[in-house]
Length: 64
Image 1 (cartoon, helix red, strand yellow):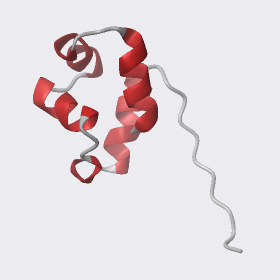
Image 2 (tube, one colour; image 1 turned 180 degrees about the horizontal axis):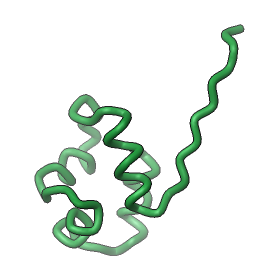
Image 3 (cartoon, helix red, strand yellow; image 1 turned 90 degrees about the horizontal axis):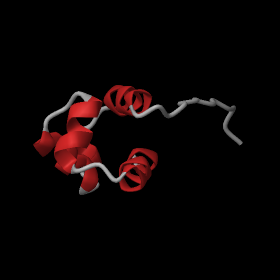
Image 4 (spheres, helix red, strand yellow; image 1 turned 180 degrees about the vertical axis):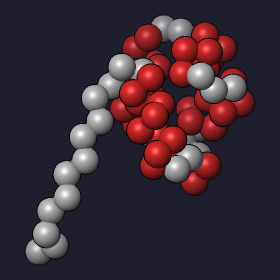
């Protein structure tokens, strides 16, 4: 979520333009901007990051 928010800040796009680029509604983008993480599944965040041109990598390690 933080990486997507950073991307949005750096892009200079309005919320409406950013929402259109990410394929979501402006109210949904507002939820993202306001850190309402409970409203997003991991899958949704990965998809948004991908649409923003971000590379997503998941690493799983054995617990200490």
